[in-house]
Image (cartoon, rainbow, N blue to C red; front, side):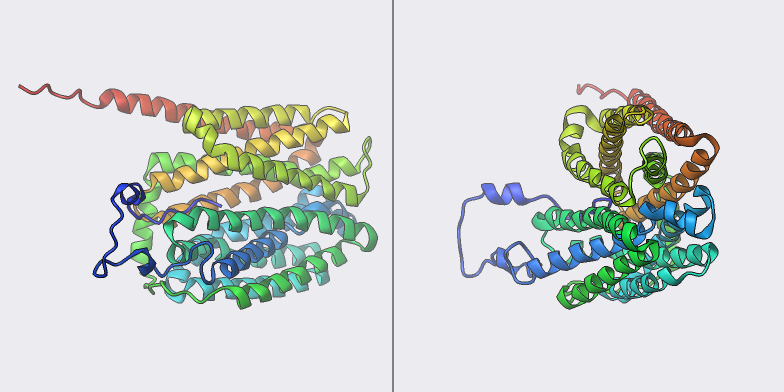
Length: 437
């Protein structure tokens, strides 16, 4: 998820350095009624949004580890089965911006609750899909419903949590995303090995129902939400301004290209590992998604990397790491393939963390819409990568999927090089200061 910014002025350092003088007529920090660690409601809120993140990503990618079984059941190719993933992420990508506008009018908690309710209901219908076409349609609508979560969660946190605790609170929500994406794939893999993909997807639906109910019971009612109007003209103008910003557009493209690699690799890897020479059972194939834990570590260290190398230097490192992983995955050794997946995952999460955080830093106004546009590009990349990776696999095997990934990484490097050149050109155009007389 892209990071959020409250837009609050940074005054903590100045306050800390001032002499401590308590006066009855001077209000203290307790006047801030927003939530903070250890305060009323904070733990409930954190756990509620963690569960929402688990449900969202478990549902969104529930069929990804099951594609070989879906192909076999419906008698379709890998590229056709991949649409069960692409349709869900594509629906989310298309609706995240409109959902962000609806949350301004109807409230964050209301929209998140409605989104989860619709998504889990569809999750219980997915196992009964009579055809691949019906399954794809159900998944597309489910993805559109889930768009209400990323569109509202960070806005809710920015309004209800004190600025000093905001990064930690958002981190817990992102952790829920990661845990949901990983555990959903692992659970479906082992359940499907015994009872088939329909029971596996139904199991995820039931888990998501429990998460949704607990979320609604635990999440505190908003106290600082200010209702706004939809005002399409204002939204359109803000979006237009963001899309006219060359740096923001480059960041959107970088996020989409990184996600193309990630989506393509993890959509197709199940086919490769289930086939000769590896011939792994479905449960073991699903367990491969434990590699996601590497991404959690690399994303958390991306800030330190950017501090040393800068944003562009970090993107070069992320691109090089992803490239090395793609090339290693071509090996015939299972150990080298798994190492390749580790490097691909680490490179992707580092690049995503740098690009998404740079969006909030770059956008001076309309940060919610800037982040929503990044998420749209990100999930469009996921949808395109899932489809193109499967098409490439069908045409040229795993080497075809790797070639698609290398092409996307080349795009990341090219955009970053262009940005470096544009920054140097802009710095040369800045007039030198006129010496005072």
